[in-house]
Image 1 (spheres, rainbow, N blue to C red):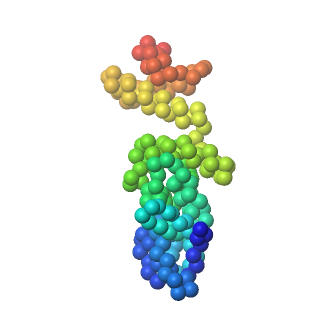
Image 2: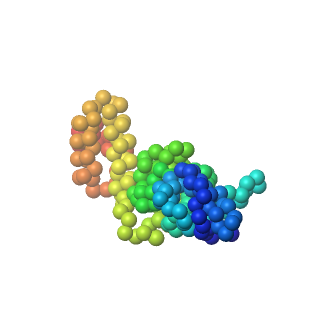
Length: 197
């Protein structure tokens, strides 16, 4: 296992760097975050991960230990390969990614090329506890708030389909959710609106 490579930057591209370490040239795949960190350097140390497949041995490098750790977390998720993980880390910096995971922000994660809705949800599901354990101070959605948002959106869509204007639907649904003494289902919310409760 190659934990890190330290050397002189011989060639730098947004997707890879060639480092000369004691006369040996390492071609290392990098994220845009690492590329930005290396732009004005002549020498550097990259924290590396050697990814071994039957047909290729690929070295991935990161300017920060946190970025390498997140890369390893990402490739541990079913359906996320090293190429996709690198794409995620090129689109979001480590802090943005951790925040998106902690807040269950699927939209931000889905904005990354190659990440669909299911993969974004799986990524959050598998990594949220790990991210929060390591960063307890990260802002997060409480479970109730997250579920309420989903329920609210589903109820609004149904009511708009039934002919309500968005403004009226939002006002009524918000009022019902605010005054609810217990957890309501989407159907219960819609029935209350239709009954004028």
